[in-house]
Image (cartoon, rainbow, N blue to C red; front, side, top):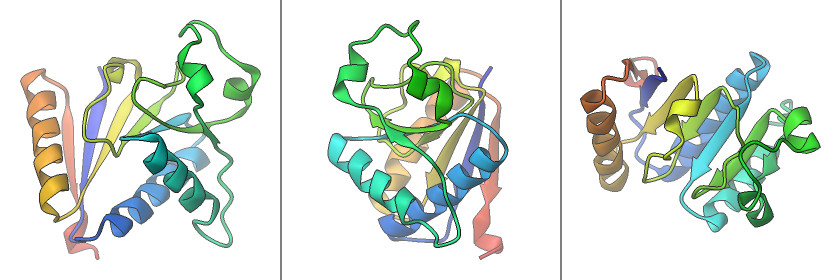
Length: 156
């Protein structure tokens, strides 16, 4: 069963949420995990792609965007780029198969949640994000997923 981690930040700005998500992605990548970052739209995915390229001067996290053409591929197919890249960014149902960690920055929970070993949610103190992540928490709890709350407000 997928383990769920909620990272609760004192931050209120969406940019702070995305910066923290970059930290999580970097940590998972350095732990040799295959990571998928889920966003709400192509525009958000492309913006996060740029953010990850420019995240930190001394950091390099090789990653790829999941393109629309990838959506049409069967989940059983594995492309050479999926074998060579550990971090993918996408939206909707455009998700590569067989990844360890889901970083969910989307409003909805992907239907493919069960394929991940861990799902990470980043909570900031903004009404829209709080509402979405509360719904996610309720969804996970009702289905019996193991949930871990990591309160980052005390360490910031």
